[in-house]
Amino acid sequence: MDGSVGGLARALITATLVCACSGGSEDTEASATDAGTEGSGDSQASGATSGATSGATSGDTADTADTADTADTADTSDTSDTSDTGEPDLPHALGTIVLGESHPAGGGSSTPSVTAVFQPNTEGAAGAGEGCFENVGGCRIAMMPECGDGCDAGEYCSFDDTCAATCKTICDAQCGDGEVCYFPAPNSPGCKKIESFDAGALTFIDTPLPINLFPPYAFDGDNGSPFAPKGESSVQASGAANAGFEAFEASFTGTDFLSTSPSLKDLSLGEVFGDGALPVKWHAGEGEVMITVLVTADDFSSGQLQCEADDASGSLDIPREAILAAIDDGNVAGMTVSVQRRRVDTTKGLSTKGTLTGVTVEPVGWVDVVTMSTESHSFVGCGSDELFCGDECIDVGFDPDNCGGCGNVCPGDDSCENGSCVGAESCDMCEEESIDGACEAEWSACLDDSNCVDLKGCVDDCDTQNCVQECADQYQDGIELLNLSYTCLCEVACVDECGAFC
Image (cartoon, rainbow, N blue to C red; front, top):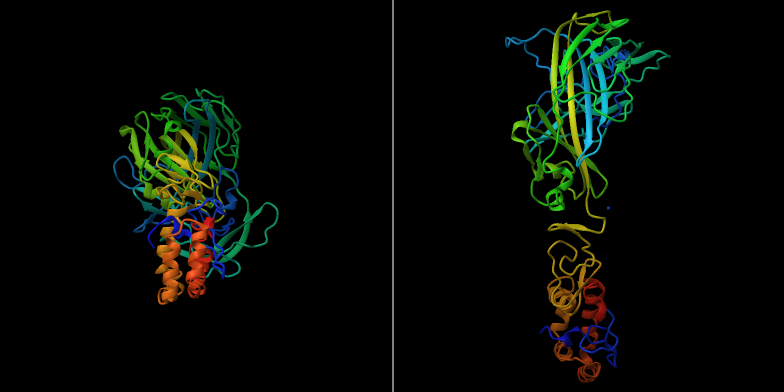
């Protein structure tokens, strides 16, 4: 094959050799958690959910995951489990009150959020129900349990306390109104009355928004921040009517508002969807910073990673390997990045009262008041027919400089059609590859026959239909074998590349 224009005469050759030659103008046409439902019977033993339905969880077995070689569990609060003297503290009840504000990158008003949860004890509660995580590039990615061939009826796949996937029994006791299923003994579901564990009414003092919450502590607000940055405030609890915390007052100081610089919204497509690390920067502060990245793949699957950062440094580069690991090394189609600063103020030495079925209520309680400021922005990746190449989205189906993939340049003046280079040079190259590839048997038969070799050589030098016809008249005994080679070329090996010449 000499690469000449006449070498593109690849239509089936008849006895009269009707063939369209590329050299002439005639006839040539150009997209954490547990897999099973845990129900109410396998959640943490704290016995409290938003201070309202502790009976749904009290007495249950906790899904606490200890740190493994490549996995760990998320802490449910920032409460230290040691005293100010460094000695371990005795078990205690725990209240966690969270005041948060979130705002979009580049400006806009804050959206407030306030939650409150009270637990009768912290024994085994840290990380309970939070799942297990894999560490990649200094960030953690939620793991999904995989139980081999699956679980039996009445079971679901979850993690044990070493982050190993295991089948667990579904709590399926038939309970009445005002009751909840739980496990009074392992694998033995039963029913108990729904019980509350709370702190009564919560009144917030000296906060920008007037906040008064009653169990189960539902908060309704659509604008503004529930705390002032570095502002001194307090929360007063009237005390639980039944089981829970006695009346208390806890003071707290609001964290500084988080502000990215440069703004997240100003990150380029290359920085977000390229091959390098994702740079995130903010005005440095003195809190605790967590960066959360929700990644969506082009097959609509998604994953999330969290990376702790040094607030004082004001920056963190999110490793690309961690971003890709969140979607099992798929193609990133979209991303939401959130940067959160938080501060925790702890009040100790509080009192509790009351009892709960199957759960120990510790007489001493702590309260964490957490203030959080979060800035976030969402990025839309390339369309379903596009790939991110360099610093822009390219339709690789029709771009001759990125045909079928980034950097795949079509030779010469060849065009890109549906992700394949089409034209004289692309067809020549594909034909050369087919000789030792998909059409090896057909080409071998032709090359072993002198008439086929002579006919092919003659046709390769043609640039008109009349020339091809003269070759056919001269070497008619080679037509059948050459036809078989061209049939394989046009219908098997080079359908796209040579489509215009077949």
